[in-house]
Length: 279
Image (cartoon, rainbow, N blue to C red; front, top):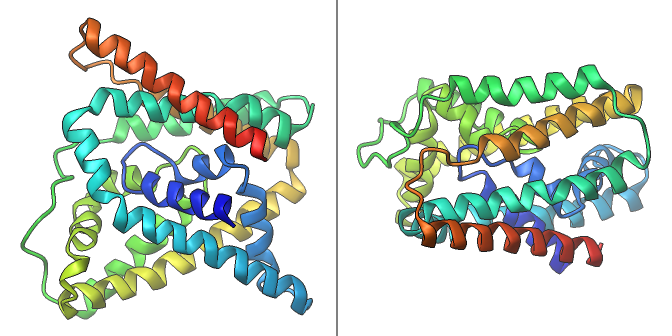
């Protein structure tokens, strides 16, 4: 249960940060397949499997909410004061998860080169389209509630939910490319006001997230069953490219930053190896 909650928290935290994938965090923590299977089991005729799936997914969901809401300020503090080191910590988490992925998921299967290259190209394509950090600031002036806004929030939620499960693909980055990330972050930042102007759009976004997760899980489940080796090779390409595009080449490096960044990267690696041992 504790590991599942930690996995959910990691997914929630990852979905706050453009460029970091919640799906990759699930692979890192070894719960990716269990999440996919549990979502499929929700519509199973086997009541026991359905109940187990509900309990497991509820734990992941609670963790994700804790990660999204409870750690938003922590992540904001780290990025404001130690942005380079924080990015290298995430790189360590992702890069050191690759051997675990090969061992636990691919299990000696040969790599399919074309899907692997496509996975790499998808991430580099998203990075190329990424407009930068110009529209990530929290906006204190939020739009008035309307039917159009509610539909938009469902679509934003569906994108966030659908990409939440895809290893290597950052839901926040996709929203950033579409110019809607500021809205997503602004509503989350103001959730503790408990204003209906905040809660109603967030409720519609929640509906979208559920729809996105269900659709994404069904697609992933289908392709993993029909094209197992190719799908895993695609996912591996997404993960490998994710660890590369996060490297902050434009950061102001000095001896202190280099040493602390290496420590942060190794810390991420140690955490992944430790979690792998627990698995």
